Length: 367
Image 1 (cartoon, rainbow, N blue to C red):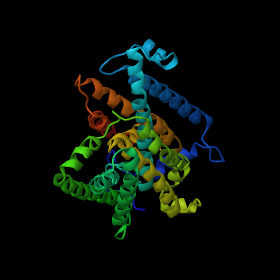
Image 2 (cartoon, one colour):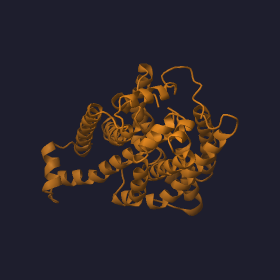
Image 3 (cartoon, rainbow, N blue to C red):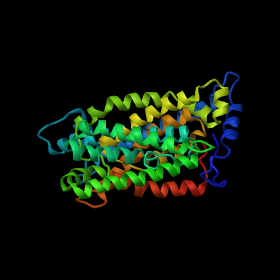
Image 4 (tube, rainbow, N blue to C red):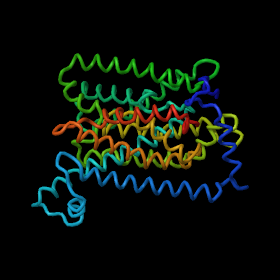
């Protein structure tokens, strides 16, 4: 597969093979990482887990009514139904758990999508997956009157899978095949077209617009355990597929010819990993709406700690993406008290400056 023709700037995919080759030269004869590097990555991963735990605790404590750490702990271990503060903390638990699950799904999907497409700009929003899921959900609301995550999820899956397939087919046309630049352009063009079709439906049906507009901005507020139950099985399957694909993604980063030389069936590897991505994107989008920037920013940021090795990029993304989503949700809770700003809006506000900083530093973006 041809590499990006972008100038040798921070988002260029150039140097990928050289970096991975240099990385592999630090490995032992059996191809495993040296213990020092593995221990260092494992230590940073534990730090990331601690950060995520602290953010999750803050998600239970911070809101229109602030709680002390002692109150949060007592509500979890010695729940008193007559205590209003305990009831508020318990009501925040589904929201926090949903943020953890959806964030992990988006982080894994974004990292895997960048590896499969060899495109450092790949993300469920940019590649048209969110647009396909959103259009399918709108069609389901308008034509079949669906409501709730249990109904949204099947339409979101179908729309996400169809959009991903169409983007890849369009980008595959021509002599060079599905290059990173062509994938990004095809995703952007398809997203614009799908959102236009979606708007045609929305402006023609006020009822559909009323039911869709709160889901469209993306967020984890106002959901209960039923939303999580509907999507969790698909998330677990998708996460399992993606997490075991780290070595395959490392091989794909070296180019299709090198991956074949290492014994991989490239079309099968891409297809199976893409299935995991669709499961993650479809279920996350069905549960929380189209939330952007999470799958784009986090995989770039974690490369500061992991380098180009997807065996570490994937678990780091799974831990740090929900932290970013919960921080965005927390910011949305307090920025306009007593009202709230949906997490889908705050992720763009929080994530965009971070991504610009990463681009200016020119680090963490090699694939």
